[in-house]
Amino acid sequence: MDSEIVQENDILQDDILIEKHKRGKFEGFRFYANKNTTDDQTTAAQISAENENLTLAFSKRAARFCASANGDFTLSSDGIVRWIGQPVGQLAATEDFLKPKLIILADTQLTGEARDNVVKRLERFITFHFEIALKPLFDLRGAEGLTDSTSNLASQLVNSLGVIPRREIATVVKNLDQESRAVLRRLGVRFGAFHIYIAGMLKPAPAQAVTLLWNLQNEGHDQTGLGEIFAALSAGRTSLVVDPSYNRQFYQLAGYRILGQRAVRIDILERLANLIRPALHWKQGNEPKPDGAYDGKSFFVTPTMMSILGANGTDMEEILKGLGYQSHAISSVFFEQNLLQNKTSSHTCTIAQDVPAAECVGDQWQVMGISSTQEKKEALPTYVTQSDTLDCLPAAEPVGDFAKQKRVVAEEKVVLLWRYNHHHRLPKNNERSGYRGQNKKSKPFKKEANIQENSSRETTPHTRHSHKANKQHSKRSNHQLSQREKRPNPDSPFAKLAALRDQLIREKDKDAHTFSSKGH
Image (cartoon, rainbow, N blue to C red; front, side, top):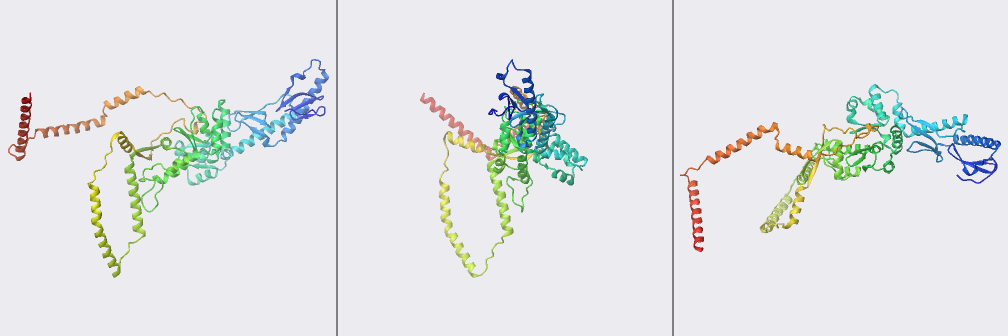
């Protein structure tokens, strides 16, 4: 930083003035001398004076550094601590994931008490930064009065950085009583349908701090996509399209779970579970039908589900499959008819229960009933005539390729119904518990081997059904042979009619042959 020349031996922020000449510049606690001020004829007294002034400058700079507020310090994603934009320290990994080691960046002229004070001030800032950013994790780590089961779960949550798939610790969660769950809930733990997680760890500041610590442990130098992912997280994006050029660990460290081509936030997946749960447990009765409910055993995707995830129909299929749901397709016509039938039946039941039928009494009601009956009888022939006239008209038959294409599209329209697959297994390297590991590359798809396997499956029948199939086939063939062997009685009228028919056919063929021979 360039500054104006002032009194002799004065210090201006980063520039050092000795005998009214600039001798160099500070950057943090490192001094860089100006090359153009070097003089071979510099006396020993001048060098000594310069060193004394430089030591004094370091001491004054250290005092100013220790008096700075926390707002003057920043910690970048590469682990470098900066003071007013200048590097003064570097973080390094230790055995304790949450407590990195500090390396001070300073010249040897910073010695003694001044150096100790600088180190202490840096350590206070680092401690303050991580304890504030990762407060939910530190609170859970230092919680007192936990039982063995709750302490075990708390330890696993801390080691997995705040998120564990529920299936991995299903037995532990099942054995927790309500009191233990209440204790963990007060510490910020949430028991979701898909994950056990600390809600406070899904915010941008904790996610950035966790990512920094993970980079220190894994010596991550390639940070491609890190800025874009955290920018989307800060903007409140509930899901992102997965970029294959980005490190997949960054999505998971930011609180997203990769499902198909999209990465969805953990808490948003739990909101999706809250929409699915009532649809799967719905029973037709007095309670209102929840959105997405079909028959109480399966559900269909609704616009609300797609809206909170920011996904389309194809994305929803991949997301639900990744969460452990399986689908089966039904015709859209049958689907709409079933929904209409359920809606009509529930509406009819409500009307029948809530509104009793009106009872007609008195002479006036009888007169009105007779007149209305006569009006209906008079209007009936006209209606029947119109319907008969319309029925006489032939239905328009679509022709051409456009009509065929339209018909095919209508036939292919289906609706997917979803239900949970209890035998679904989670992928090994797609969860937050594996953040410190590396994802294995997927094996290339062997198309030829797959085709041969499918052809072998088609040609070789399943052994369990082969006996039944052969038995049914033999029954059908025996039945056909018995039908062929049965001949009608020649004295029956059916046999005589068949003989007469055959005789007429032979005579007709004979006449046609005679006519063709005469023509030649």
